[in-house]
Length: 302
Image (tube, rainbow, N blue to C red; front, side, top):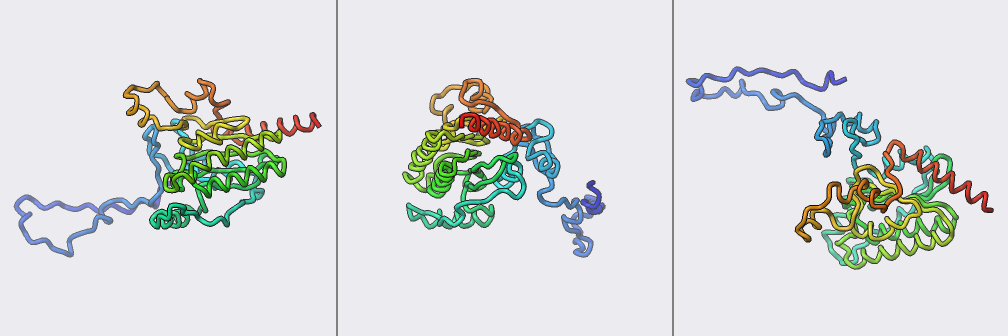
């Protein structure tokens, strides 16, 4: 499988101690590329949990999950949608919204434009409508690769619009969270999104509609303190960091050691904060079953 990836290694006779002072022959010198094997960039990936060096293609075939320790790597929004949504059924929404810079920081605006180019994302969330197992659903998928999935005015607006459209169309909504919290570059405007998204999800709930939240690594800060914990059903991926302030900040503040596994999805399940931990390869199956049960319940009640 790896044949052809390595160049032939050239061996060099090192000069004896007595010859080190002699004048070097430029034609006899070789470059480092000729000495070392050539390995294509991005071919290998190190697992942050077990430390194993893994073949990147093997990880991708497993849905961005370590084949040795089952560690769930952070996933892009596009890969998540491809994994969850039925082929050719996803329709993206609200991609035309203009970037906001309420504090008029030129460095921040430039950073956002650069991130748009490098990530191919409009903002830190992708919203739209699609089908999962044949069931129509509205989706909001956050992406930690865009400014750590922080929630600014555009993220809040896109998610609120998606929830409101789900309410109008009487559709369930599925939200995948991945965020460092509210976006500090937008100050109080980012904190306002906590109330805005929560209120929209509350109206969706009052309409008797289903909301499913899937917490992925990391889900912290203002996102955890708002819509992430307001779903009718709250699922989580294994080993995800979930909390408000991070464990390092808490440890330094209270000057005490924290319990083992503190703020992981397993810890939250044990303490009743979430309903179930679902492995990534099983996520579509579980969500499909939940949507089917909800649809069946609506049909029986009508």
